Image (cartoon, rainbow, N blue to C red; front, side, top):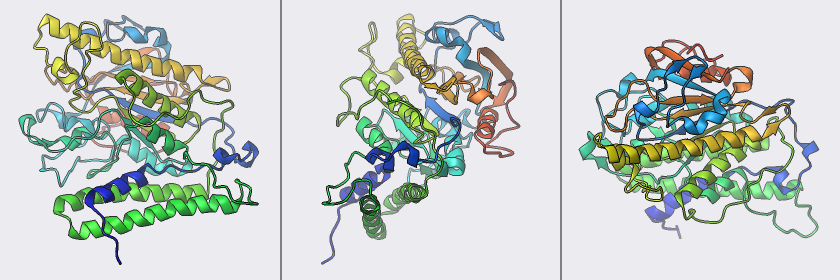
Length: 458
């Protein structure tokens, strides 16, 4: 008798498959000598998105070049001055005059023109930077890319905000204009994408590292994908157009799992760091505090880079209109998005400043950890490019020009940090994306609305 599956069951199964991590033989005890090593560390690329803008007067400093003042927002980064570039005058022209938040999020890494739709036919106008790179070099690592976040995806249409689907502001990464890449918000599940938390089955007379055991585990994972496909096809045949559109999005994620499985059968050369990264598998569920949640997700990103599980990662520190309550900060009452619309009232501006400064402190802590992880005579930060910023310059007025942006790391010697880099007014943000793509080995002639490769970085 054919089994009947509920919509919830199928979507839960798809979510499990998407979260299915690649199994490394080394995790089952394979000796390091068995791994084909890279002779030098690879270049990594991380993109950290902060919603709701900044206070422009507390971000943009006086001075120029290497000599500039540290404003209140930048103060947490002062000890890291020689490890990042402060970028100015970049923007996404396709986000102007449309909506304060929702369509600006996918455009942040693509520069695309986001269509106003009813939600079942999403169109962001482009593939994001991280996914473009992952599609070209992702086969070199167990995970093509890693997408992390804090807030669960939202549904429905924001009728008060221009009629855009809230899903647009829930996903930073897009595999193509119509396909968001699901982000993981539960630390344990994110961790398990890197290291499958299951021990080799106890089989009498078999070494847990034997081909028989490893093959069994891979077959188990393949059978999960077969079940998901079977369930999804059955639902698609009966579902509404909206359900079908959503399933099409998830099919791409399932296919990415299959590609990772194929890569696991023919592993590429890996970079092997000595020593254990100081992070144990997180407990189930979501951490009790927002700070612990955010820091844990950032640590998992570092672990992914440290173990060479992926070289491309994104992190949403909040969705387009993050409603995270920041009452845990002294003198702050309310949620991030609400406080960002402070109407220039002194008390509101002061609370907004504290929230942004707190975000900058978390980012500074992330960079400090990267800098402390040594890879030969360099650090993990030296061997990375870390893009940080927001899709708005001013959260109160939704200003799109001169976005608040930082590019940290040395890009394996291709970046010269420690400076303030001023591009010409209204330079496409995609010029920076193109420059980062080239450094990652993706030699496209153009990207989004780029007019060329952003200069002045080296």
